[in-house]
Image (cartoon, rainbow, N blue to C red):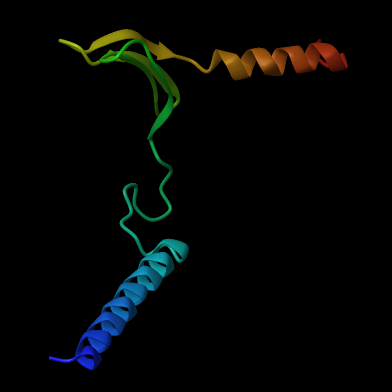
Length: 105
């Protein structure tokens, strides 16, 4: 085997890796990846926020349908801290906005 054979191998490898990269980019760009929620359905589950408590435990705020649940995960066991939280933060922002504009009556 000479240098020409090794160079062809390396160029072919770079070409194939480039094709894989372009195909992956196109799949993500045009939405051909796996769909978790189905076609036009609204997603029912979302991760709203996480906060590290220490090295093993974290607080996780999860939204299911229109309710939020606060979970403490990690360590020895997982605990539901609070469930059925309505989105009070947005409601309070809406109330403050209405009060500032004078439309809150």
